[in-house]
Length: 152
Image (cartoon, rainbow, N blue to C red; front, side, top):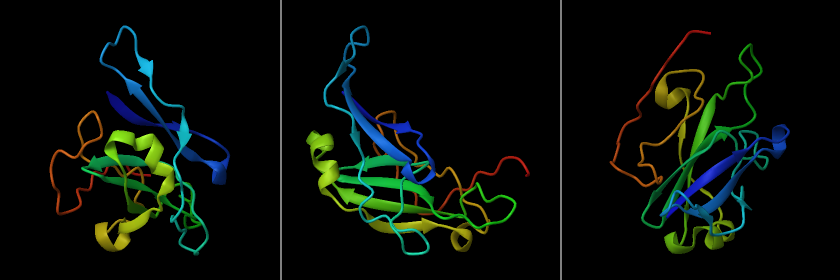
C-alpha cells in the first residue's frame, strides 16, 4: 500500500496539499482506499505572523512523525519575488495505519527552517527530504545538503 500527497494548484493563498491513500499491491487494478483530503495548515505561520498556506511541500514519515517542508510566505519583493526566501520544516504526530483519519486532527509544529542563515543563499525554494518511494525516511542527515542549479 502506498500513501502519497497529491499537489493541487489553486489561486495564490488558496494553494493546498491533498492526500489520497491507494492500495498499489496490484498495479493492474489500483484501488483508492480513502477519500481525498486537504492536509491541514493549522500551526503554519508566515514570516509576518499570519496563517500560512502550504505550497511546494514535500513529506517524509519517520515512525509516527510526519515531516513536511514547504515554502514560507510572503517572499521578499525583489526581482525573484516568486521564489521562496525561506522554507519551514514542520512535524505532526500521526497514526501511520490511519494517516488520512489522523492528519487533520493535528497542528503542525515548527521543527526548523531552511533560510539564508542556514544555507548562505538568499533563496531557499523547492526543498525536499531524502526518502524512499513510499515517503519513509531512509537515512538520518544532520546537515543541510544544498543543490544549486542555474543562475538567474
